[in-house]
Each structure stands twice: as C-alpha cells, then as structure tokens.
Length: 169
Image (spheres, rainbow, N blue to C red):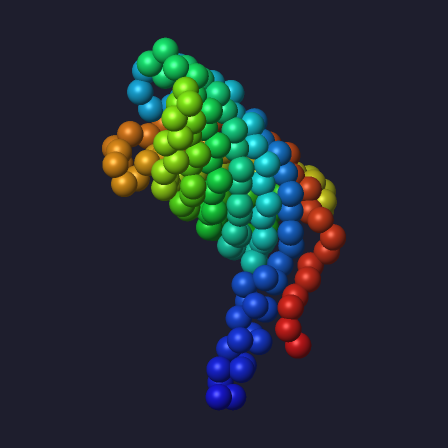
C-alpha cells in the first residue's frame, strides 16, 4: 500500500514537472488527394519535462477545396518530442503523436483518428521566447487511409509562461 501511495504522489511530479510554453504557428499544408497547398494556422501548449523531452498539444485549422467541396480540417493532436541536444540556442527536435482530426466536407462530418511525425529546429535567443521551423507529415485517417498523408512546412513563435514548477514533495 505504501508503494502505491508513493507512486500516486511521485507520478504527477515526473509527468508535470517542467516549463510550460504557449505558442502560435503558421504553415503551408499540402493535404492528401488533389487539393492544392493551403494555409494552416494553430496554437500550441507544451510542457518541457526536462532538457531532452517535451509533451505538446496542438490545435490547428485550415480550409481547402476537395472534389469541388469546401473542406475544414481541425486536427487536435498530442505529441511527444525529443530534443537530442538538450536546451541550446539552436535546438533541433523530432517527434510525433496522435490526434483527433475533425474534418467537415461540405455538410458531412468525417472525424478520424490521425497521426503525425514532425522535425525541425527551435531558436531561443532569450529565456522567455523562441521561434521555430517545423516540417510535419500528417496522416489524417490512420484507420481507413493509412497511406494518405500530407506535408506541412512552417514555423511559429512561443513563449514560456512562468517559471519551472514541480508537483510533489
């Protein structure tokens, strides 16, 4: 019982310790199929667990035409990102995750489970702000169309909120 209590108290410390950042991004997304490139915008919330790992939640939005119909795509994703060099002025990263891909085609909802893989570089000239360039490959429907994906190229700005925090004793 004592070990279970220690695990319940210690686990949130490991999961939620770190710096919280919020940011916005802008990219050019080339969706699967015959649709041409389109602008994708989004917001992100990240937690840097330590110098080498980060968890991130992203909400993006884009609109384009597919088969003559208006399409709205809103991916809500969760990623685990590795920073192999740790915290540096130029901080390369690689990661991926899964997400809920809300897709409205005309008046038909085609929500799916999707996945994404990303890599890029983050430049952080100060302790509170940073800029990044990211390349992302998205597969909006990994169940029914696992071979249909699209690339996005873009970047964004982020800022660290508050200071380091830990939960625990």
